[in-house]
Structure formats: structure tokens, C-alpha cells
Image (tube, rainbow, N blue to C red; front, side, top):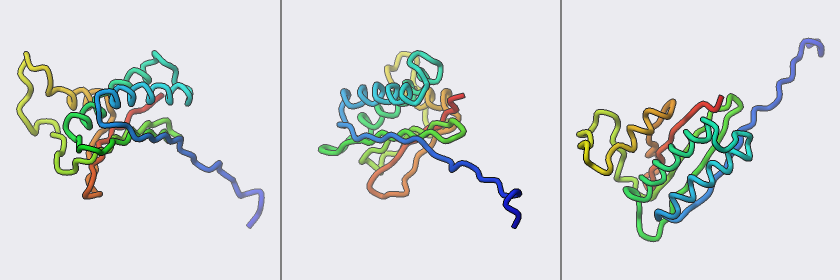
Length: 149
């Protein structure tokens, strides 16, 4: 093989951040704060569209983990990873594998005067994609992906 024909590509790296938080309202609030702080450290400043979208997505997924996935004495995990293509994957893992989120069109829409029931519609509107991983029978991970370009 001719050495001049070999092209070395830099190894693809993924930036990652993970933290366990208490399954409380305070833990959910802290998840949003830590996510925007980490994005800022990675170069997506506070107040940018990307930071605002991520803040909303993390807030909703963390609030759902606290409200619908809480198991006494168990935390939830927030995990962020950015690919070299600047796609952010947000994962929130809770200890309640048997309570799965409703997918779009899978349930009755919230009434106009209801105070809850629209969160995953917001996730669907803001994220490029989202879903739920139940491959581990003890936990569920709800994820959302968004382009940071």
C-alpha cells in the first residue's frame, strides 16, 4: 500500500455528561440548570435557541421522571451526549419501567383548562426525534434528540 494514498481521519469523539439526581421537584429543576450549564461549557451559550430548546426538553423529561417514574428511594439519571455532527441526545432514566410514556395519538388530549398532559407534545414539537428504551427491565429511559447547529 502506498503511504501517500492513506488518509487518516480524526477519531470521532462524543462529548458526554451524566448525573444522578433525586427524584424530586428540586432534582428536576437542577437537571435543567445542569444541562444548560453543560451546554455552555461545550460552546452553546445561555440564551441561544439551542440552549433554550434543551432547557425545555430536559425540564419536561425530568419532570415526567419525577412525577410518573418516581420509586421511593431511587434517583433518576440525566445523560447528555453530543455527536461530532452536533446532535445532542438527552436521556432521562427513571426506576419505573412499567409506566411508559404515551406516544402521539395514543391517548386523549388534555382538556383546555387542564394544568398537565401536554408535556410530551412539547417534546415532540421541539425534538428532532424522541422515544423510550425499555431494554433494561428495571428502568426506562426516555430520550430526545435535537440538532445544535
